[in-house]
Amino acid sequence: MSKMFEITDKPISMEDIVKKVERREAGAITTFIGTVREFTKGKRTLYLKYEAYVPMAEKKLAEIGSEIKEKWPDAHVAISHRIGKLDIKDIAVVIAVSTPHRKDAYEANEYAIERIKQIVPIWKKEHWEDGDMWIGDQLETTSYPSGKPEGLE
Image (cartoon, one colour):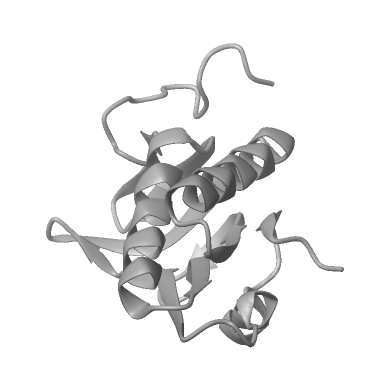
């Protein structure tokens, strides 16, 4: 069986992630697709590079799945996040949530992306026309001059 929560260096297929949560009890499946945008705050991005401490990142994605199960017991969740070099319009993350009713699916999906940004150790390097920079954590509140939090390999 494929992983429900994974970090991958391969392109992500939204259809494959949705299939992981399809079931007869579901009346709704919501998806969130995070893609690489060309402009951020007026600055042109050429491409992004994501890195992650994969074992910890997958553990944290599964933790988010457990949190969702506590808040929305009927929800089924699958999350895939890509690492490596991503070009403009490439898919960086896909979250699929199925529930019996749509409101829970929307809420649980939004909860998942916000928690990814808060707790999953994934770092992003922006490559612009005039240089590059490690962004730090995904909330962009902590910078990591070395590209990663201190203490991680």
